[in-house]
Image 1 (tube, rainbow, N blue to C red):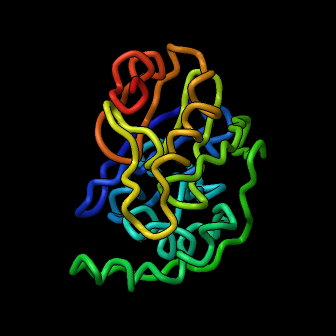
Image 2: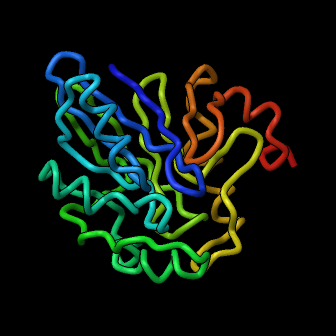
Length: 207
């Protein structure tokens, strides 16, 4: 599987581009901004976008949804609890002095335990509310895309509308903590980590 991580936008969201080496079909997770850079990576690997996946609906993770959908025709997926945020991206961004286009509506909803596929690759959706009501992670053997649920040495902020610190910790402990320790974790911001590293050293998980 082809894996590219591209920090995009003013808040340096990790846009994750995953490609099936056999079919050249791709999933783009959290295209937050920098559409041209995303397209350059797709062209580099001769990939065709099959699905656009949002870990949640905050503006910094969805800013290039519209441009990517227009260029590729690929459907947008998000958890139903965050669907309404897609049309509020502009208002969200304005609170931070940023200009962000609204996203098109979701084409499909994500649900806990659902399988999402691109080419011959398959990921399982893990609903992990806490940072936002509709926050999700994407897991396949050896790899977790954790969005803003889990970071290297930290967890997602919970001072936003609809957030809950206790719910976030519960999500991590019930949905993520049981994953194999060597699992690579690509968070929504910042460097990669592993489940074993976080379970051992993350202060939020060792209180």
